[in-house]
Length: 357
Image (tube, rainbow, N blue to C red):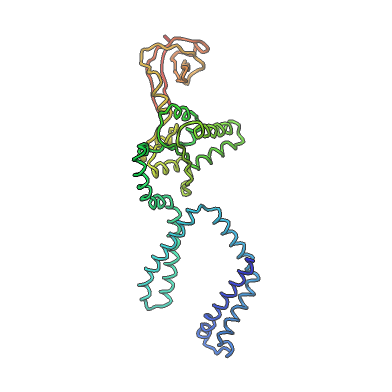
């Protein structure tokens, strides 16, 4: 059916071009054409016949191209199509307004070419801006309705003032976020972006056993948060296709929602702070609730391995805190008493330096 429609379109275009081009050829060639070709019906029929013959070769590639465009449009999100179309319409209207003074140019062909170029350029730019800025435009268009809803809801629930907590992949796989939510220390809405879910699914489908187990653990943690805990969980369906990295998408989403990014990724933590985004680092929380160790205190630790420096040994407390023991190499495999000399605290964890008592 679509082939017949395409052929009819070719015939219609051919007849229209026949009416336009035959008189133009008569002027350009400056020769007398047969009288029969001066008849508009004959001109239209001749153009239709020529394009019908061309359609026998061009109809299959045209149909393939149409199906390709149809498939792309069906896969594209409705927001992309809607805002892309709005951008295109705005660009064409702007091109029309710019073309009005161009009509005053006396050089007919030059003004026509300029108008065509301006129309194509502004139409393309409007379409691209509509697609790439659809998230911002959507939030702008819904601002008034959201403000009205927020004003009504604020009278019933003061929790709307609490910013959303956006989870990244690392903190989901880590799993401690579920226990923290269960204690009730985290309030408000938990936001899980769709692109984070896609990354977890990719990890869970990995051929590497360790990665596969980590991905499945992350999905189990999300399932627990959503079904077992009394937390409001929101799945953010949007995406930022112009941003390839997941970390950069999380930063952009945190800016868009004015939320708090929850992570235990040290690099993402630093990047977010540079862009003035509020970050909750689970490692910082874990370090904050560890017992305070002061220089001079005595700790009993089991030395498990050799350190990086000469004669150093490495031990661990029950909570996993690493102790670097000076002159502890000879005590590997033994439990010894150590005296704390200094403590190094970072977002990556706490490290204690000590020497054998």
